Length: 240
Image (cartoon, rainbow, N blue to C red):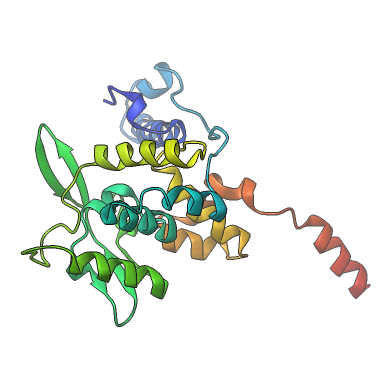
């Protein structure tokens, strides 16, 4: 049972409710379950997300310049914005997850803090296991950061902090820069919107973000893709 819906997005709760309801419908049809309890409980969550908040490059640059006095913060926020990884995935990274020769980072786990205990867990979904190709400048930032670490084992977490540190630095940077605050998770949306603006396909976006399937990508970001109907009509006119 999901006891605190504030921990999950409304669209995620809707997806979970639909899946549970489908299981009970199957049980009703083939295993003589009297009725679907998920249907009786009513709907949960929302099909469409609220208006998405994200930063364009100029806002991100304005923000990140104010947290560069802490090199860990500079590295963390650049990774989140330019790779699109989740904050839990970032906090589980070790230096061994990076392949600087191929300029990739392997996402294979996620960090969580539960009852004052640090846990390294499987990623959110099977498709979340992936390799993300990084731009050279981002690899340079990570390498420079790693050189500043003292007595560091490459098998250990690269960022030995909790999510509250990232939230604190986000608030600090927004106050100093004057940039309107967004959530840490919205840096992932910022990366997605940047790729869409650059003209990349939903399929590539889905693979890079580690979505379970392309439907998730389309449901989340379809409103950011430009309307191509006029372009279709124009090309059909030329063919005619």
